[in-house]
Length: 161
Image: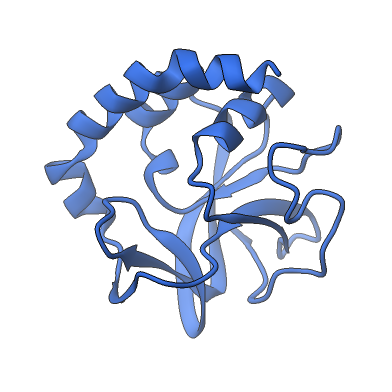
């Protein structure tokens, strides 16, 4: 199992420079809605190769007024997720266009010695409770995936620029 370190590494060429991913973009650590096949199929048209992962020192926090979470620092917590290891540049660009502009993209080190990128929620609107993936699945996934399918063509156009 892969595990990301508790703190983001110092700014790199890709961290903080949204919409300008480096040519060698690392794997993506996903801890929220991107863990669901229906969302991935709607956005990029396939399910990328993935491995189970977790991020110690982080939690997938519920956010006020949103059905998706934000990854926030939380000593003693562990955020479960997956690491996508075969995203193309085009797919990365689509997912980056999809993510809320409030997120910061940061590199995280993986226990195996590798690296990955994660969308970190900077601050504000963070609730005390952790995001509940099963509750999302039962209450929001179908509508959320349908919305993703509706906006995917626009994301593809944004990603092409």
